Image 1 (spheres, rainbow, N blue to C red):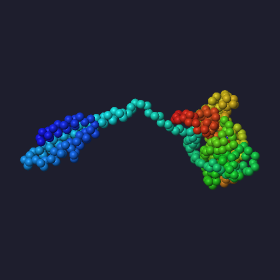
Image 2 (cartoon, rainbow, N blue to C red; image 1 turned 30 degrees about the vertical axis):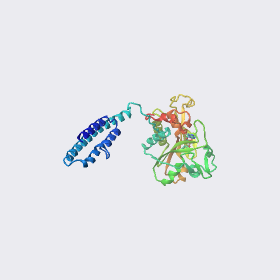
Image 3 (tube, rainbow, N blue to C red; image 1 turned 45 degrees about the horizontal axis):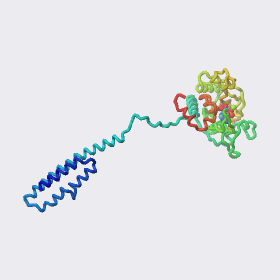
Length: 345
Ligand code: FA5
Ligand code: MG
């Protein structure tokens, strides 16, 4: 019996050492130590032994089982380590490979210009206000001294939705809204950037474009205040050397009215293709708020005066970034937009 046990032990140790995988090792365990295993069978057969032999054989079997178990355990941890190393080698990551490039969004050039204008005017004490893009005829025209049938309405070709509603043609529509909301409180100092719409379509005119309106109302506001404000604005926006020219013009809601030209930044006023050889580029309309407009919207024109201006955002952005066609702003071509993915532009 002892020899049989010694033989089992020898065979088992050999097979344990030869097991190449965890599965093979487990098969050896089952073969010798499992319920129907060879060593277990010896224990089962002990009933046939004499009372003297039984404890001797019993402890021998236990000894062999213990040593087989510890042998299995040792080989098992070796095999586990080997399997792990193989896995690590197979799944090795080459951290020196270049990574996939992340696509970043960038700020739209029009939004950059809006933010810059807001910073300039907020630093001068202005509030930034908003108004609806779908506007009533009343606010877009009537309260700006443009009654129905007024010939100056033809200056802006409008998109009407019904006889009383249209897509606003100018941010000037917020002027009346701000005055009505303030109920003769002063000072009013606001700018309003936003989208505007007209029936236009060419390289410098789009059916949708952006404007920024400015409105100041207080006692003793003068034309000098308008000029000084616009000079600061234009110099900060387009460069310290920009010169301004006020050209008398006509808007029904201002009197007197001016269109403001800035010296061409490309040729410094000498004349080039950008400024059509004139040395000047028109950037905004402005003037002193018409007394009728003050009165119609709740401000006593004998007590209060004010100035207003409206500038085209697209045109400013075109100057600033040297863009030749306004339609690039609205066609969402990423190759165009990606160029603005830099802090210094
Ligand atoms: C006005 O719209 C007046 N509301 C400006 C104003 C405000 C005057 C306050 C007095 C007091 P005008 O129609 O000129 O004015 O338009 C102003 C600017 O908007 C233009 O100089 C131009 O830069 C821009 N603009 C007008 N139409 C278009 C268009 N279709 N596409 C792009 N920009 C346009
Ligand atoms: Mg104009």
